[in-house]
Image (cartoon, rainbow, N blue to C red):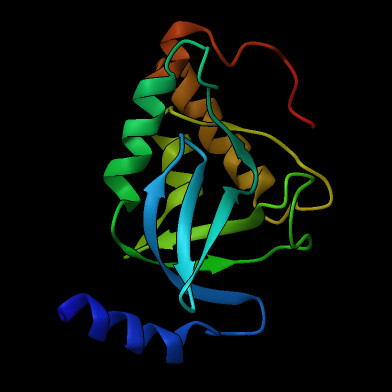
Length: 154
């Protein structure tokens, strides 16, 4: 009953601003992708400006678990940059859980690398600066060398 009441409240909050939505994280797919229920509908959401290891790569489980700890089951605010979706139909968003800017926090902890996915670039420079610090002390996935492909634009 409590979850139903929360969902009903979210129906009225889901259109938070012109470029913002509110939803509840129902599933963590990996380190940079989640499923979010918005207005009673499930949507797959890909974090803008970051990349985490894929299923067959070193540090996949660690990055996925870091993401899970930050967002699973939480009400999140989703903020659009320029693009609505990627080629796979996933919503492209900056994600906020409580007071945590999730995209940024994953970079800060070393579980994500900063990557420029044009035209969505609002926080790229900020993420890149944070990544330099995380990489310099080999935080999170940086210790594995997974992010040393020198490709920062996708």
